[in-house]
Length: 160
Image (tube, rainbow, N blue to C red; front, side, top):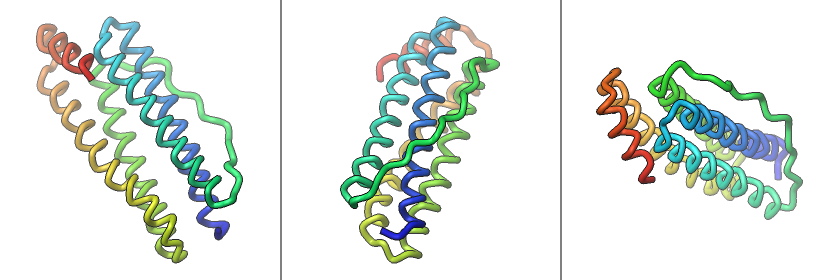
C-alpha cells in the first residue's frame, strides 16, 4: 500500500476514535443535566464511532499494514446547553464528512481502488450521519427553551 493511503487510513482511524471520545463527553454532559434520552443517543453514537474505527483498523490489517495509534485530543467536559451539544454534533459530522471525502479522493488519486471502495461505505454512512444530526439540531432549535418540548425530544432520543 502506498504510504499516503496508509497515512490517510491511520488518520481516519484515529479521527473515528476521537469522535467516540467526543460523543462520550457529550453523553456525560447530557446525563449530568438530566437529559437521559440524549445521553443514551450520544452513548450509542460513541459506540458506532468505535465500530467505524474498528472497521478502519481491520482494513489496515487486511492490507498487511500496521495501525498507528496517536494520542487522542481531550474533549470538552462542558457544553452550554443540549442544543449546543447538537450544534457541535452537526458541526463534527460535517467535519468528518470532509475527512472522508478527502480520504476517498486520495485513494482515487493514488489509484488504490480497494481503499477507494472501502471509503465509499464511509461516504454513504456520512450522508446519513449528517442528515440525522441536522434533523435533531433542527428540532432543538425549534423547541427553543420550551421545557415540555425538550423533554419530549429527550424521550424520543432515548428510543434509539
